Image (cartoon, rainbow, N blue to C red; front, side):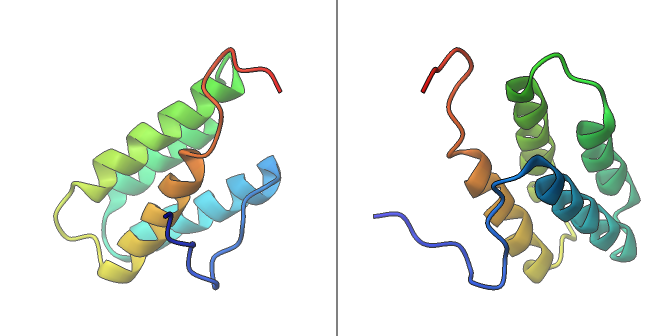
Amino acid sequence: MRKAPPSDLPRLPYAELYRGHVRDLADELDAAGLHAAAVRLRDAQDTFWTTSSEWLGETALALRAILGEPGVPPELARKLSAVLQELRKTPPPGFRV
């Protein structure tokens, strides 16, 4: 059984809400002194990707790398993990509804 995301984190159904939320997390990384991690996350968001699957996949890779870095505050790690959990719900490339 999947654990529900924390109630204080928004569900991310729309691209702009998602992008804004992830940009806010990058700002939090900056504030925590994790500047390289913030740049990595912003780059995944602001680079032009050919497909949305590529964009979301690169964001997931950035999140995994950041979560593996030392010094990520626990509360921020929880938020980053929640976004990663939401990304895992997206269908793989080539999937058609």
